[in-house]
Image: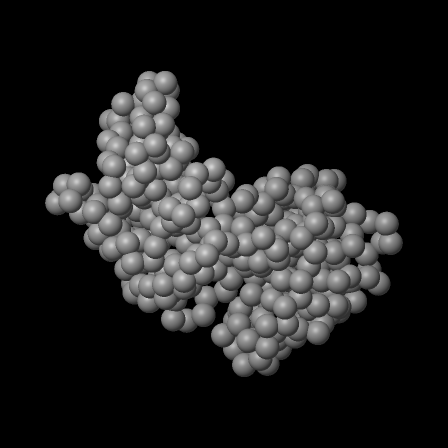
Length: 188
Length: 188
């Protein structure tokens, strides 16, 4: 079997940690690929909260979910930095995914940024269940990408070891800066 | 489920890639934990070639394998840099594992070194089958450990992308320098 690329491995990690019925978050809906995956993963009694700043992404994903007859998802046309506005105060979260960088195939000027990404992560972490997982799939080959990565790494490396495990999964001999994973798991 | 530590994940990776009947290598037999794992993984028609520079490690592992009634293993009391002497010229290799650093519980003055480790890796890589995997579990918290790591990383990052995938799997927020994984998979 081939070593899993970052996208595949992000799904493997979430499959291993998220449980049916969980409340989960797709912080960057984009083409809806992850949203649909999460929706199926948590099942009809689970709930997916999805964010995107692009109306086209929300519309296309809503249609995709309707076609797949999945109706456990709430799509929000807003930046993920507003997550606390939409997440019920006492809601525990089983998993979350961020695809950081830009939406493949769409406007490359619309990218995520370190400050808003960190605001979203900080909004979600206190809600994570024990063993709950927040997965960042980091694309950084675009202008501004390296800045975002550096901010994220600095933040993630400083997370207290007693409360979180932080895993980095990365191919290190590739020329074209393939995406990599930072996964944050709540320990307590 | 909890995120797998490096030791557990090294076995997961080998389980996903090595097939029954394969010829595999334990480059650092140590306490025989990996040797036994590989022996069971490849089964009675497979073959495990194991190296250690410490006679005590070879003796204890031979006994461990005998108790488990595993007899598909060849244990060599020599450094793994001699691998080419023992590996048949046209022998293809399904997997290999290195535990780099020192043997837990034994003499901490006996450590692996970058030069001999690289000699062993260079001896094995040409034998790797397509999708065959060489896994390095890197302990680097001891004196000299960081030097070995730096040599390995420089080597691994320079492996040609068309021939190899090189994966790094590492916890990045831990104080006590836990071991991490560098996994090299042959692509062609």
